[in-house]
Image 1 (cartoon, one colour):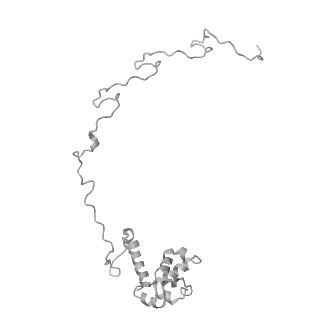
Image 2 (cartoon, helix red, strand yellow; image 1 turned 90 degrees about the vertical axis):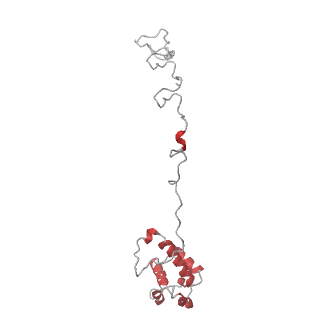
Image 3 (cartoon, helix red, strand yellow; image 1 turned 135 degrees about the vertical axis):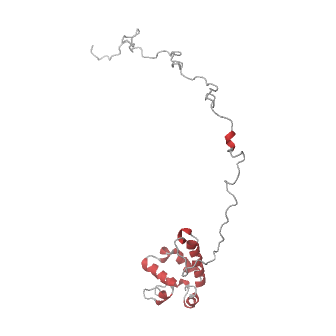
Length: 202
């Protein structure tokens, strides 16, 4: 209905007429007659006091850049198709029938499926990944797959550490303080002289 009446609107009004506050008042018969103008009036009443270019920047740009109602109608229909009819999440809730028939012709052809996927391509090594037959890179001291020991890595334990059989290795010399007592509680042979302060009492 809006598109059929666009020629009549163009005779007396232009798309930039939506900025005329005297035209979009509450009792305007023009807004009751044309759906587009009625929607603009509803937006202005809902967001009273807010500049139109802030509340509806897209509609504001349309009113200032498109010279005829035919271009406005064509642009809105393309926008509706792209944002509503082409969105499956939106259009799946529509009920199509005699009143709203799904008989339009889409402007874009559906995308063709790919000819093949990675599931269809055969692996070059008979189904095994190329890296499955790579040589072993295990450490020389690691056990082989059959449980046998490989090349044994030389021991790096401290010389005073016990061996794996519990036997002591090379004993590290003692580094205890000279005034420390032996394990049996006796004082060592070389005792450190006392270092008490000169003002201390005997």
